[in-house]
Each structure stands twice: as C-alpha cells, then as structure tokens.
Image 1 (cartoon, rainbow, N blue to C red):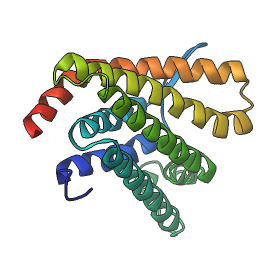
Image 2 (image 1 turned 30 degrees about the vertical axis):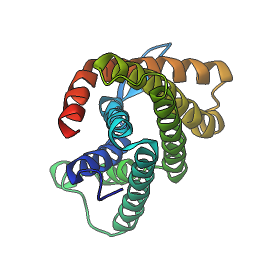
Image 3 (image 1 turned 45 degrees about the vertical axis):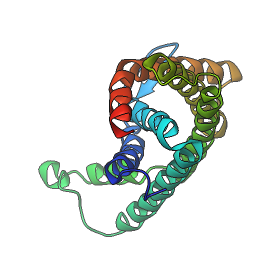
Amino acid sequence: MLRRVPSLVVTAFVLTVVSMNLLANKELFHTDWIALDCGFTLSWIPFLIMDCICWLYGGKTAARLSILAVGINLLMFGIFKLVLLTPGMWGEYYVTEQPIVNEVLNRTIGGSTWIVLGSALAMLVASLVNSLTNIGLSHVFRKQKFAHFAVRSFTSTGLSQFVDNLVFALVVSVPLFGWTMRQTLMCALTCAMAELILEICFSPLGYVLTKQAE
C-alpha cells in the first residue's frame, strides 16, 4: 500500500486524522439541533482522499490507509500521555502564571482515553463503509467522468460520515453524556449533512488531482 500511494497523500491523510482529533477539543458552534467541533473543518479531507484512492487503487488500499492512520493516531495519543507526565510547564503558563492553565492544556492535549478509542473505532467502521460503498458503486458507474466520480464520492461519504458520527455517539455520547437515541440520530444525520457539503465543495479538486495521477 505504501509503495502504491504517493507519500504526500499518505502524509496528508495521517496528519489530517491526527490533527482533526486534536481540534475536536474545541467547539465550532452549537445550536439546539446541531453541534460541531473544530475537527469538522478537516474531517472532509480523509474521506475525499479515500474516495480518490478508491478510484485509483481500490477499496482495500483505502481501508488499509485508514487503519494505518488510526494506528498512528493512537500511537501519538500514547506518546502525548507519556510526555504530559513530565513536570515541565507549558509556555502559556509563564504568560499567565496560573497553574490551572497548565492543567487545562494537559487535559486538552491528553484527552480522554475512552473518547479517543471511540473515535478510532468510529473511523475504522466508517472507512470500511466508505470503501465498500464506493467500490460497490464503481460496478454501476463505469464511465470515467466527474459525474460518476461525484455520485460515488457523495454517496459513500454521506453514508460513511453518518456511520462515523453514529458509532461515536453510541460509544461515547450515550454512555458518558446520557444522550437519547433521538439526539444520537439527529446529531449523526445533521453532522453528516454538514460534512457532506464540504465534500461537495471540494470534490472537483479531488477529481482533477485524481485524473492527473492516473
């Protein structure tokens, strides 16, 4: 897989997965019917990359890349946890001289183990759904045009983003925050729609890069 997929693509995929999990600690906006964290600003990138890889190299390669990214994300989380055990202070502490600043940064960067594991599980399940759906549609839409790329991409991304949000909510939000099934389904649906909008906006760029790589 690493020999077939360009190293820049692998790097972008892995870096995005790690970064969006860090950004997920900050809320983007919140209403009565939808809540998005800042990880949303990057979450469309891995799914667009998976769609491009499915087009070029097949679903197995896309799924393997997702497993690699999730594995590296968990490794980095473990490293962060170990580094945060050191007695040193964050740079921001010396600006405010408030110990609470150091504690808050440690909690933010370290995160919750259960939440990180739930996010990893959701990503793995969603990537599998994305790859299977995309490849399944490839047997229906064989013509190599943007319309066919878009149908495969939008359908697989919309479904997989819904699954991603649903699995995370069932594993994390329901047991930890007491969400009801109605809240879980509404959040999964609305967030998937919002993420799909970004996919639609940037899919022409993904298609152009994909055609150049053929």
